[in-house]
Image (cartoon, rainbow over all chains, first blue to last red; front, side):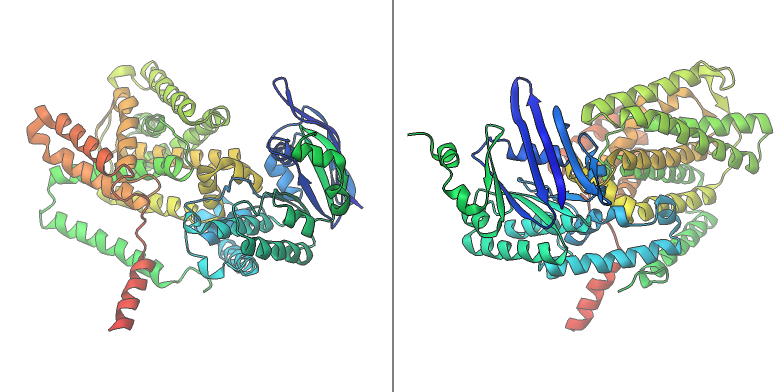
Length: 257
Length: 320
């Protein structure tokens, strides 16, 4: 079953087509990799899919309640509320909030009390806050950050900030998760740990995962299918084995001889 | 550890409020706080309300507003006009307050929806313009008696200011420590990340802005009914800057900081009264020094909490 589909998706910045005519189809429960040389338009594509940018042309459709709904050009928060969550290439945590509160911000849309209940401290506030607190702790346990819950996010080491970002994305209760270079700057051990974590959350939370990554061992290791972008265009797709031997991909990375 | 209403820390806060109430009452009764000091106290109290409400907008939500005096003047003039029409009694003050709250929240909404899409400097300039518009409107209306202003009876004593100080503080603290409050902080920290976490950032910016405006309007009501005269000039751009200085001086995002800095600045202003000529020079020099040596404000983003105090106390006990 298709969960996410783009047709002829294009985004121009002035005269430059950062993403051009990209059509892709992601099935439910898949773990898809998106690779390409620097500046190929991978992050721009993520930004289009999560609503940070509006598409110049083309459509994006997401499976919502068993039917495909067009989400191109919707606001990021609307798209998140429809079930897409993401992490960022250059970590964007809420630095001055504690680890626990970062997660709670992610859960915000599922908290059922408003400003009035908060200010008057109605019983609803306490019920919901306690529920959210427990759920946030559970999520922190998944990414192994439970003992860091009261630290400020900015004080975490780099690898843990990446994990916290993943946990925060999970807190929005997504069906589709985008990971933008989750292993960037990690050592091989941490990468291995991350690989396991991605597999674990994918199963545990019943997710479809799409990840951008430069670490080929990670991509080849976990992805079931890979799309390759170069100069904003899709140049190849297929399973890791076929991508490895694809002439166009080799050319894009190493240049023509 | 489930949260509920009846915690040790909440009890300690209540105790602190009651003790400070009776302490101030006692000091007034035995004459240590005389008439002059009482006026200083009122100013400080009103400034704290203004500062914490602006802190909610600037320090917590990260939206740089320079129009706070505008909302204060809405509250002050709503009260002033109604007191003038209805005769000076306490109930007219409360009706004035209610009208002020209603008006300022409507105006805040109207101002917020277009301007909060702006960022940083642009938002500051837009809100600055708004504050001046309000002042000019008041200056040119008949019912507000133009530039001459309104002369009003003194209808409040410090007890009501104290009451509203407690209420306002409760409102901003309760709001900040809740889901909408966390959403506001996330807007300050990273707007893009906040949006991708499913947060409608515009909605929360407006929410903080409106709550701030309402509290500023309440401060305006208290001002109008404590200081005999209100003139449009009392609510000029300078007043907005004064409030901003308190917030920045105390530490953006720290309500405790706003309390401490409003107190210090109030005391400083009073004690420099006898050097009227060089007062602003000393005041300015102090501010420059603070900004050089402690750019994050006196308290940075530290917040006084009884729970931290209890924790430290328990640790000490465990050690000994």
